[in-house]
Structures are given as structure tokens and as C-alpha cells.
Image 1 (cartoon, rainbow, N blue to C red):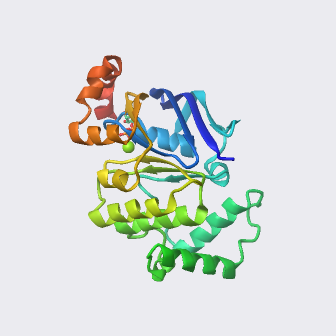
Image 2: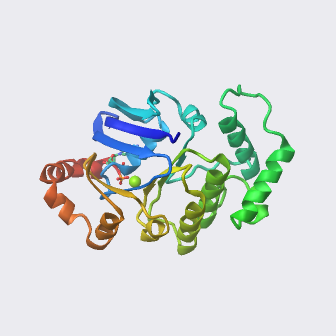
Length: 272
Ligand SMILES: Nc1ncnc2c1ncn2[C@@H]1O[C@H](COP(=O)(O)OP(=O)(O)O)[C@@H](O)[C@H]1O
Ligand SMILES: [Mg+2]
């Protein structure tokens, strides 16, 4: 049976400020969703909240995975249930090699009951799977010996994300991309990699400024966020229309949210 992630009337604060103001969204395994919206509309906030980042406080509403409310679970527990977030700004962990990190992550995700400090998956089995996957994805095997995210180029960060997706096989992946710092090589890596990996076993939410990503991974659903709410949902055509024409039309159709967006603008500037 395919899994379902259901977000109902989700309200999220950062500090005292309400950022998400009633988000409703359902993603099923196997579906590709694009989340679009102007800067500051709350897209990353939704991604971080789904991942369980402690800075984002759910003040009301629910996040359910197959009917189970997961909004109180920490990020590790969510990962064990099959959720995966590719962070907009991946962290650097000096001293940890790509292979060590992946072996830990794979062990945890595959043995949800594993206790901290218990044995990792066997080295031989891990190496074999890692090698095979890297070959399939055209990733240089030397990459696994690098330190995690240490001096990675945009393209290498994306290779890391795609490698994680391939090995962890999450039920739901949230990809939050910025337009800064991604060269065309990086965009190609993530576009082709995701297209190779997504399928009936993965539900994907893509937040991107790169049209190419959605050309390779055609979304069945495109959602538009404005001032902390999803105000419109369409298909892939809506995504392309927004890339071409921007958000003026969306603001016109949703004057209430557009006014709220204006109202928070000075705060956004002061908060940066
Ligand atoms: N960690 C944070 N600290 C302070 N303000 C934040 C934080 N995360 C988001 N915000 C605020 O929430 C609003 C939505 O931001 P964000 O979710 O990053 O939007 P988007 O990803 O759509 O550009 C902005 O006003 C932003 O300043
Ligand atoms: Mg963002």
C-alpha cells in the first residue's frame, strides 16, 4: 500500500512571528509536487518544519504519515520513518567522511529499532552497495573518501544529496533548492539524478527556482504559496506559467494574502 503524508491546517511560528498560516497539502508515495511562491512566502519554513527543525514551532495543525501524527517526532525519528530533507544549505561536518556518514544513516534508516552505539551494517555489504550505487549514478568512487561537505562545490553537494536519496530510499523527499551557488553542472546532477531515482516508491516535494529540474521531473501538482498559505494548485503548466510570468497574477487573484505579504515586508528586511 502506498504511504500518504497529510498536512492539515498547519500553523508555524518562528519566535513570535506566525509564518505558516494554515497549510493544507497531501502527498502520496509516487507523486511529484512542485512548491512555488515568491521569496519569503514560507516554502523553506514548510520544508524545515517537515524535517522537524527545532526553530520552527507548530502552533496548530497536523502532519500525519499514514494517519500517525509525526509533528512531535525529532528529525532522526522522522528519517527512520522514511522522510528525507535535502537542506538548502547543507552542513559541513569536519572529520566525518562521506562513507562513514552514509553507513550510519543507512544503518539507522534500515533498523528503526537500533539503539545508539549498536553495531553498524556490515562493512562488506555497505561497500558493495555503495560501489554499485555510485557506478549507477556515475559518481567517482573517490568521492566516498572525501570529508562530508568540506569544500564541496555546488555540483558535489548535489551528488551527495542524490547518493543519499539512492541509498536511503525514503518514502518522501523534500528538496529545497536556492538559485544561489548552483551552476549548470549542479542543476544537471540533481535534475537527472532525481529523475533516475524517483518512481512509485517515492513522493517528492520540489522547491526550486530552476526550471530544468521540473522539466526532467514533471510535477503532477504545482502549489503556489503566498504569505504562508497555499493559495493555488495546478499541474505542470502552472509551474511553467509562473516561471514565465512571475507572481503578479497570483497576487491579483489573492488580494488578502498579497496584502499580508506587504504587511510583513518591513519586518522581513529588519529581520535579515
Ligand atoms: N530561522 C528563521 N529566523 C527568522 N525568520 C525566519 C526564519 N525562517 C524563516 N523566517 C521568516 O519566515 C518568512 C518565510 O521565509 P522562508 O520560509 O525562508 O520563505 P521562502 O523559502 O519561501 O523564501 C520570512 O519572512 C523569513 O524572514
Ligand atoms: Mg527558501
